[in-house]
Image (tube, rainbow, N blue to C red; front, top):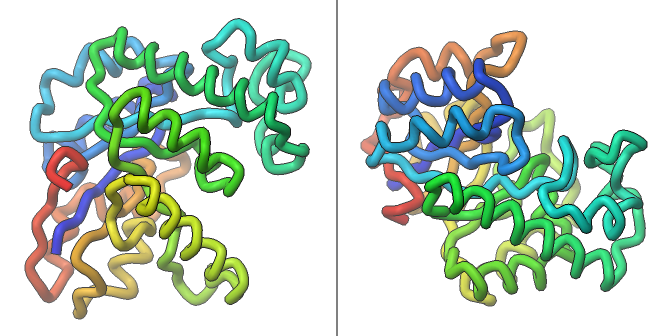
Length: 249
């Protein structure tokens, strides 16, 4: 089984950057996605050369910090707060119109271009707070794939523990969205979940040929995931896995 361990939020803060890079040094993290508008993007970008075995993707953002594109302060005003920063979950609470989708495409292009200018060779796409899995974003993602030739993407989450399990209707929508991503040409893993859920559900059986496991190193206060990342967590599995990056998917 091939497993990608992706750390979200690279560039959000110095402590998070440090925690992610420590995990990469210990080879328990194989990939990370970067916030182009994160306050600590520049110091993160300076360290990427130390980890040629890892992949670095784009953590597309519509929920936090200032937009990268100047026009977004006008065209994405419904999802900005009075300080002209992205306003949390607003993107899921407003009507997403065609002009807004065009503005989101432009903003995400600016975010990708920003990372490229900082020396990043984007390996894949995902999004801060998973906003790329809003169904209306599919044509935007398809356009990004065509423009930047980024052919790999995170799917909508499809593995949960019992306390988180969504209803059948939502699971069906997720399956349809993931199928649509593959239909428009994206390459994906078969499973996406977090590290702790994967270990709790799949410690003794191989559930699929590939999986992406999401992590958030440096989150405060430290949680069970932090303990797992301080150890070589694959030793807890009863079968062999290959830890890979998105470059090898």
